[in-house]
Length: 131
View: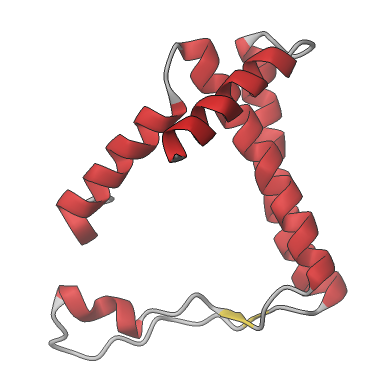
C-alpha cells in the first residue's frame, strides 16, 4: 500500500513538474520549501503563540546508558500547533516533499526505495544511524 502511494505521488510529481524541470531549479525550490517549513514553525511560535520554545542545555544525568538517553532529551517545544498552524506546516512540508521527490525523479531514484532503505538503516543501526 505504501509502495503504491509513494509510486503514485512520484508519478504525479513527474507529470506536474513542468516549469522548474532543471536540477538547479529543483534544488533551489527544495531549499526554499525547506526554509518555508522552518518559517511556518517559527511563525507558530512568534506570531500565533500556540507553540513555545523553551530551550536550554539538555539535562542528562551521569552514568545514563546511551540506550536510555531519549527519555532525558527535550524537543524544547511546549504546546501543540493550533489547527491553522498545523495546516500551514503540513502544506509547507508537502511542498518540501514535492521537491524532494522531484530530485528523486531527476536522479532516477525511487522515493519508496529510499524510504525503505532509510527505515532499514534506522532499525538496524538504531541510535547509531546518524552518528
